[in-house]
Image 1 (tube, rainbow, N blue to C red):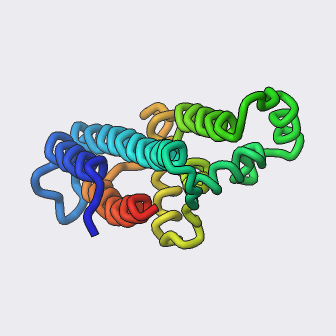
Image 2 (image 1 turned 180 degrees about the horizontal axis):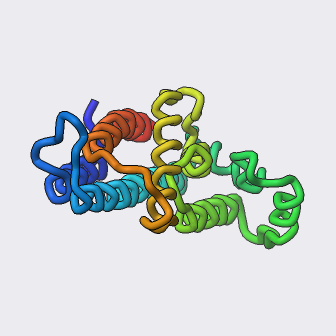
Length: 212
């Protein structure tokens, strides 16, 4: 099955980052000077940003396409139903949302005055806002972005999800920690291999999104 244009763009960009920021030849013994290690840290941060943007784009496109299609033919889809279910539940797709938060959100909603179309439009608008507020690629972020599309997270490769979650946490250790406060060296080869493995899982996710 073919992949999306957006996935191809991601792949090209990650190849560019590998070319610009990592050594052409990796050390067999992991011996890298400070400059190469700093570039590897930058590679991790920029690769994270590209993957995060990709996940946000394909989830938003899936929901937008589903709602636009429904407006044309009025035929429900798995994505549309999942979107409305998440909207009804106050977007509680992870353990991070408390029941009280859900109730407050429900009480703050305006009453629908026109039709079902208004409900769908409100759900789409709220989801797009949640995508804009997304900050990360960890498992909780993945649930927020893709459960409303109709994708069952349990059907995805759980090892890949764990690796993505770890990658998200490791990105935070670089982005929010001064170099003076960390003594852990970074291996450019390990960073490249991590992205290569994550990219394979992203390709699979991309194909699933295309199906829905």
